Length: 268
Image (cartoon, rainbow, N blue to C red):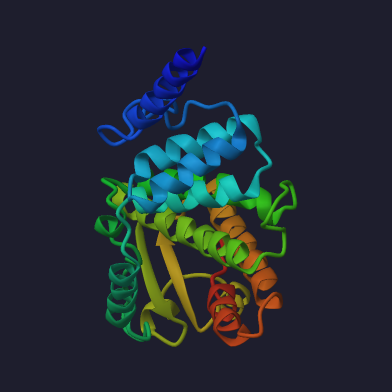
């Protein structure tokens, strides 16, 4: 009997030691990332992939988590972060592009110049249509949080969610403008006081409604396109207003709101 107890103890000890041979290979493959049906496990897989910089797989894992729980706000935020990082987006480069193009536009006091707010290379997209589609996917991921259709850590008044999705709406509008330019239209930034603006041939009533600095698209796109552009501006501003209400640092956001509020799509 004593011999059997000793053998059993030896066997248990041997099995326990095997767990640590070769980097715990005995149990190393018991969990396959992204294959679990439990939302919390898929979330953990997604966050782990984000941490190690495996953004494409992070997108897959967060999407699978949303397949099981579409209202999970943490999964949506994680997915949006993975999507942006999978594009190798660099915020510093993007800001440089905005500043460079803004400076090139100047005050719009001259005859007008072709508008370019976004550099495709900053988002690793081949066309503006592809970029518009990417922004649309991001909006579809984040906006349900702002609309109060989700549960979890992030609520409808969350500062960062509303700030990000508001900015993305305006970016989509800008990308759509540049897509128009690339296809068949010219988009120009003008000053109301410029000779070019005076020669546009619109009625005095319409001219009076123009802001001091405005964008002019020629020839006039279909009304449905203009309606979508204005809708993105309005929704983006609404999300930014919610973000401004959620923070003490309101000035920067309110400055953005003032700038974007001057973007009004009009037909003639």
